[in-house]
Length: 352
Image (cartoon, rainbow, N blue to C red; front, side, top):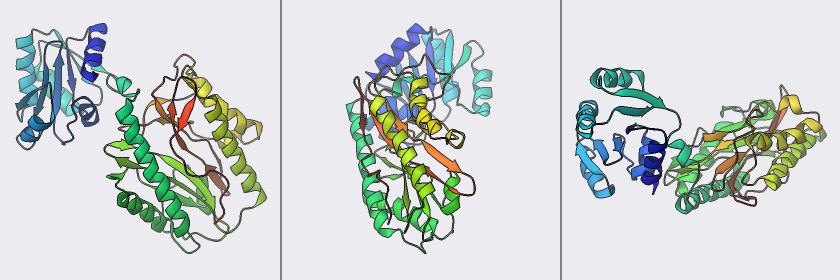
């Protein structure tokens, strides 16, 4: 089904042949999870190329593709193009420059041009199997967070907390972390991407924890901010504003909502509380095989619309320099009439 959709898109855009080298896109189309592979598509043929390390694996795994063993895919591509009488070849814009130079030199009779997000646009809409795997990745993150609440205490370092979460998620059958775990405590919580350091967590600190995992290739990504020992009135106000913004968006999300509207709902809540200048990043992003993938959101995107089956993040934040910050992030599955919140960890203000 995925290949058929891709080939229909090729016809619409007058693409005779398509070269795919991004391994996440190759996995999406073939199920191949090795580290070396190239996909070449025409309307008549589906070809997968890999070297001798993976050819046996590919033959046992990939269906409806011709498997060709080669260490020189570019030379083979020119031969295949000639035999199929194709006039043009589209390639992914993410290819490195050295690969592009070699391809240009070899395929002199082809009209070469790059594509942007060609496969990613299909990947935006998740099928039932993908949604099930993302849900499992979210369940693992949820459980790891609840365990971390019993681990965090004054005297622990940010790195210790990050390591605890990373190993706990692996204990729960994650294949790995989906990005470097963020643990930012005290004044450092004003850093949206405050990677964990050797700073000790102290009594009275806010602690922002942004983390996720991969489960069978699919990612989760969530953020919670907690407080150690106590929370002052100003930080409580900030927290409740962010939580209100997060939940306001959840109530409004549904298929057909524009990207600009998606960004505006939580931003308006924060602006009306006079913290608008301290919400310094976008409201979220797509989630799937990559922890950050399209769609992304901003106020200028007034025509793009959410579609049922998208999995996206809802992550408002407020960051006061030299004081502290709060972010709350959930993973949402867009439906026709609303959304399903996939991350279930509590969002009421937690003081441990």
